[in-house]
Image 1 (cartoon, protein in one colour):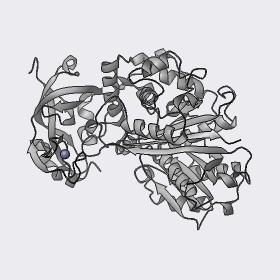
Image 2: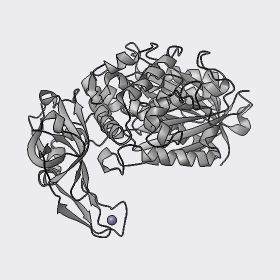
Image 3: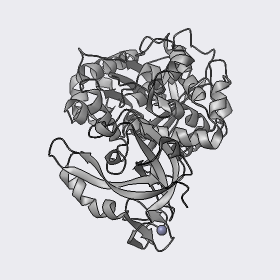
Image 4: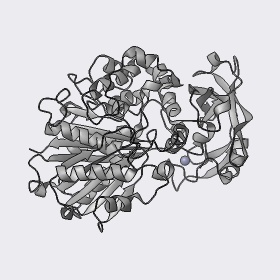
Length: 136
Length: 388
Ligand SMILES: [Zn+2]
């Protein structure tokens, strides 16, 4: 359940610092972290690594009907972003003009509140991304 | 492995059943299928039930035993199968394997979901559990949003248009007009779909399947014994399944479902047929873009051409692969645990000649049903042929 506190704190390091998994055997990068490399399986040598906070939007969608906890920021942008090390993640895109949130746009990570849990008053933090205008 | 046949089908009307509980629905569907199969309760040896999220939707787990109990089938072994929106399809596959293996001669397969007892917001959270809870829903991703991300990239890469997606909904609604079990027996125009407002751009309200209560069931029998019960058996030619990452962003591509490609390829191989041999298709159109991708991923058209394929009428009743003549998830409704069974049932009806006359194909011999869980983490494909 999204409301559960352990779900928030268990992934804090991963979310706050964008730590993913690098497989030294095949060079693949995974986000979120994995315990097994799907390509190498038992031959995989996995290590945690801070991932680059920059990447490019592969696809984006503006969400008009949101789940609980996101009402106050609706509509908001979601995107699949490919980081510069080729790992991909799903993220909100904020602080960016609507017409700039599109495939091909350069983005960089920002640290933000994700949602506020009405039941326990807990606030979940994590990454969002913003468009770097004319960014490289 | 021995041959397996569908010998009976049944379902409730799909829609908002405020007066019926989950147990009412699944019992009605189960009894209808058993009666259609002309079997007695004592002939049935096991029950497989697909159900995605009864715990979230109605606070009830232990659905396997509940099914057997309510259908009056105790003390038969009963299993609940969960694979998100593919729960019904996987339940069918488990029933198939149980009979094909020789363990049982006759089994009942059901799928059910009761979705309208909770608010739309709570239903959305329950459904988002079909995706990746920690890395999609956490970030505000709804189920429509995940498919919208696929649609957006499909438009970018292949020039697919919002109108082409809308046409899937228009056509499916048109088919559902004659379907007595459909939630929406109402035609919609292209303008209505285009004006229905974004849920998650580019997907609009009428690109999305609805929240639905409903149940569907069928009876499987070893083909060698089917003639004891029916003179219209429909044989299972193939039953395949594939898995992929729960989260969309971890997949190789955003513009197709690899699990559909794999399960589809395996099904055609297992059945010994090619796409040209298929007379009728029920594919998993939880969103309009999903129908376009299914036609591509199952090999009925080339990757990227699905939008045009639909626009040109090639998936219409008189086209090369008549698709979702029932109305599809879009218009029949999508009780998530039931849809996989319902899709198979509508193929069986076409092969038996039992579809509504407005959509009944002449002489359909082979059909395929395609059932997707989540945004493509589970896909089940079945091929059927007329056994008489
Ligand atoms: Zn590796």
